Image (tube, rainbow over all chains, first blue to last red; front, top):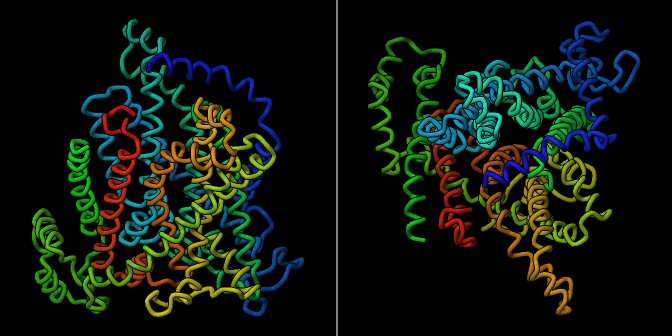
Length: 290
Length: 316
């Protein structure tokens, strides 16, 4: 068992350089789209955009024009501006929630994988309980009680992500903790804190980061689903999910109102999946075949 | 086998208890007072206090949990304070719709995913394989509500072939029932087939390199017979496992699909309970869905052990 994992792990070290040249167009296109969405979301307030909430009831579902580049929605609000402000919500929730999972789940997983024993079984057992609910159902139930707000939504989706991050961190730590450099550090009398932070963390960080990107994709989808159902971010704020939900009402007269946020969401989710999957394949050759 | 079942059952119990604890604490520990919710804006402090006493909300929390759990174990999940329907009635009425939807979706996903996986594995690395693997990867990035919108747009709004919303019970008119079910089931199937295809494809590629496949080829068996008879069954083990994992996603997807297509299933019941703040129904449905999910996973585990004797003996 140990030798097999050693071989695999060493292969992982030698792989990035070789595969680095073959990242491909798609990978860089995905990075480009992510950067673009991120930039417009950050600079939304400085960009020369009409307000995303100002209604113009005479200009309902207006076509593309110089004043409204992508037209207006069912309440006469500027579609482009709503798309960009929607990107803010998707990115804020999509990036912040997995950060909660990454830090809490990552820490728990590393501790569980390093110290083993009763602590490990407690952690794994309690995570199994969180996993015992279909995630969307649990998210819906908790938002129903806590109330709809961006903060609550982020916290809930973050907590729901903890078990998965814990598993990734624990699996990586279990393998690494038996490697020579850790044993050497132990023999040199390094403290547990030092081994965890200086020896293990830099190595666990890589697979965790790849998984983080995949988690961002999943979180954006779940946030979109909740907002689509009208149970995500509260109404005046536009989110891609709620825009698609509103666009559904006018599929027969103005399908673009549903299709434009849908395309934005699809491209963003696809980009995070692509980049995350590429990095995962680089850090974890065992699952590379998938 | 009996020992294996007993061990898994022993593990099932604490998980079920934890599920009930979590459901109860979501409903009881989080802010928001049930009595206020029921009485609405006109609640006076006296009314609230009286209702709290009636509902036992003034009891200590652990006592409320025990008595709630006791009721649940006797089949009493409570009663909606809006419609007067009991949780069990409401669920029993809607469960067949959700189960039909999920079964149709699962069959649809298998019907798309399995043949594609076999064809891709047979010519792995070829242009068709690369194209389908790419498509499957792209499909994983399409949220359920997004494919629902696209399908409604093409098949209901543009082509007008199928209805976008509505439902007729199967017993009343099977043909009409299936017509209403096509788009919802297809939406869910579209989300499920990529996972099925990816897993089966990679297992199948591994199986096709086994010696007995080479023997079958040497015997001159037809390629289709080798693929479907000799290679499919031993390759489908992982498929069973991911079916267990996928049930959770399927349930989440069903919630969205039932809402979009207005199907009167468990998902709509859940969303309706949230929107009308019908907390008793919500609590009951979450508990039943959670418990059902745990038990389904338990069954998948057993099925897996039946298929693969190595699991029973503790080394995978």
